[in-house]
Length: 177
Image (cartoon, rainbow, N blue to C red; front, side, top):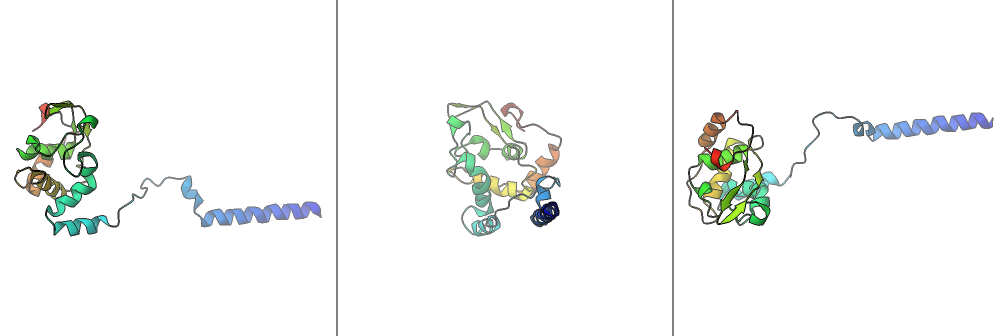
C-alpha cells in the first residue's frame, strides 16, 4: 500500500510539474526560433514625431536616440575615448557624400581632429536606418553645433547607398568618397 501511494504521489507530482512548466512555456528557454524579439522603445516614435515640430526636425530625435551616446548631445565627441567631434567638423559640413558614406558603412581611424589623435571605430547604420532617416540626422548634424552645412536629401543618400552597395568594411579617412 505504501509503495502504491508513493508511486501515485510521484505520478501526480510529475503531472503537476509538466502542467506548470508547459503553462510557463519553459520549452522556449531551450529552443531558438531565430527571430528573438527586439525591445522597441514605445516612446521613440512619439519622441521623433514631437521633435519634428521643434528646431532640428526629425533628425534631432534620431541623433538623440542613436548618435548622442557617443558624440554627445553637444556634438563635441570624446577624443580621449576615440570619438571625434561633429561640432565644427569639416567632414560633417563639407561634401555630403562623405558623412553619408560614414553613416552607411562606418568609419575606422586613425585620424587627427583639432590636433588630437583619434583611433576609433564607428558602426555602420545602413541596415538600421532608411535613406530618409540618414538624410534627416545628417541635416540635423550639418546645421547644428555651430555647423553650417547644407541639408541632405534622401535621394543623395540613396545614390551613395547604391554606388557603395558592395562595400563590406568601414571607411578609413583615405578611402572616403
